[in-house]
Image (tube, rainbow, N blue to C red; front, side):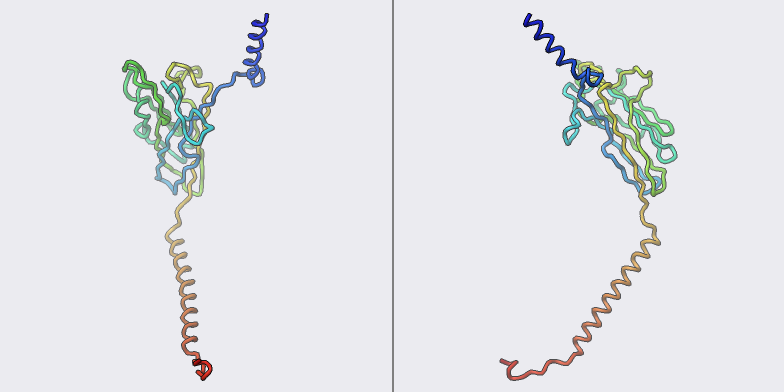
Length: 237
């Protein structure tokens, strides 16, 4: 009887998190850009954004998966009037994930306001070697917006086979998608000062320097023209 009671208590403890949250507790895995904010000055500026995995967001650096990664699929969306990804040549999966199925080369897709990439480890090696790194892919954006302005870069799953497609798998084949959380980024456009503004700033600086310089010279001249104090016997001593 005691054994059954102990088993019952253990099962109750295991189900408490599910009863409180409606789902079992899982470790969160963060997929994010390498920067929360990217700064550009105007149209034509490029951003090389790195998409990475962090298996332990509580630490101050990205951590790889304990069992490694088998496959991934991530996509970004953005305002097509403010940025573009020119072609699939602007997308590069991490070298160890640059395969799609059994073929070399990850799968990339580009459209107006969208870029996606999915890949997996090399499946032709035996035994399989799961990916222990954190970098998933690099995407190069070209800014089209004129500042001051800003716009978001979204991040999500890259589904091409429907909502039930499984994208993130670890080295043992466990599906990680329910644990994935994405963090977006933002592009801020701050235009450089115009030539006219720079000339005006230089003129004001020169005027201020000239005025302060003239005052200093005038003070020095007045000091030189001032009569020397009379020398007395007492002062000699």
